[in-house]
Each structure stands twice: as C-alpha cells, then as structure tokens.
Image (tube, rainbow, N blue to C red; front, side):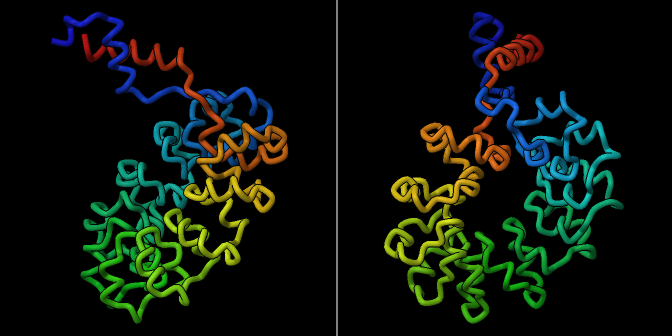
Length: 286
C-alpha cells in the first residue's frame, strides 16, 4: 500500500521514523567546552568529526553514543557506561567489565540484574526506579536514603514512614502530597531540585535556594520573575531555559561552558535529516 504513495509523501513519513540529525547553533560556534559537550545527546555527529576533542569518560554516559562507543571499545569507561540505560546490549557482552554497583542503579538493567542476582549491590539498587519488585524481595537490604528519592517507591515509603529520609524525599518528584502534609520536615535546598515542587516553593519564596532552583526545569516561570537571583551557570544546564538565553545573548558568552551540556544549543539539520529520511524511505517503504 505504501508503494502507491508519492515519493515525497513517503519521505515525509520517514522523517517521523528516523532520528533527526543535529547541527550546532551558530551562536555557539567556537564556544563549546568539548569535555562537557561529550555528554550532550545531540552532539554525536559533531563529536564524530572531532574525535580528538572527545572526553570518552563523559561520552560513556551519553545515551546517544552507543554506536560510537561500539566502534571504539578500547576508549570506553566501563564504570560510566554501567550507568548508561541505553548500553545494556553492550554491557551484556562485557560482563567482566561491568561495575555492578552502578549497574544496580541503571533503570534499563533490571532484566540483566535479575539474571545476576548474586552481583546486585542492594544499597545502590534502592535508587533504581524500575527495580521496586526486586527491592520488595529484600526489604532487609533497603538503603532508605536512596529509596526516599526513588520516584516509584512512594507506596513502599508510605508503609514505612518512620524510615523515610526527609531531605532525600524532598527531591522526590512523586512525593509532593507527603511533603505538603509534613512541611516541617522539608529540606528546602533539596526541594528546589524537585520539578514538581514549584507551587510549594512559590508559597515559600523566603526558603528558596536560587542557585539550586536555577537548574530546575519546572521552575522557569518563577525564575523569569526573579532574574536578579538566577545563577546563570546553573540555568545554562536547564533544558527549558532557551528563551532566557535568547533574550540575554550576553549570557551565552559568559556561560558557554555550561551551555555545552544543554541539548538546545543544537538545532535540527534539515538537509541531513531529509537525506536520512529519503534513504530510509528507499530501503524500507518502497
């Protein structure tokens, strides 16, 4: 049926199926910090053409870097890769190189951990949002410090209120109802990291830690009203702060290093994406 469609329409369909190609925005040319850029998920094509500048430790964390890492296995930092949720197939082939304490935190690694129960580091597993069924099997091994920040652990925490570490719970994006019920137990610095806590913070502006809040992706409206309090280095790592930097271009030069971490410094390369879609359409849709 697809073969009957116009070729241009097939390419348009394919454009939704292929991963876009990205290019660095003109306003960041010559300003990137290559070490930090190596962790940017949209930087892969740029990094491929500048391998001498790559920080392989940071790249091993990069969710989009698996093909590039597979081509350069001798440069992988396995400790960092063990935390990479997109690297499971690569880790499965190199179990002797895995750092199991970090793999235990990896939300993509639960099936692999279930096959290697004897290698699980239970302290670290308590932070894994996808490991609740495993955690419930070994309640005597729970690290309540880590579990208190686990967004999927709320029912378990509600059954063990006396074990909650409230400063860590203050970071937990799914714990707002508990924090509102027990405001005297809130750690306000940790709460400023919580993307769902902005309404609560707006009611307690005297308790806001503005340096920390500046990185909070849910806090942009509040930050816009208090630009004199913003930490622009932290804001540079905030994925929702694009329009603030476009409104204050002088800040780009001053904070370009931290901006190198942020995906919004890249834009879709329409020509490369078009050619990629056309190739995909020719191979799979015609």
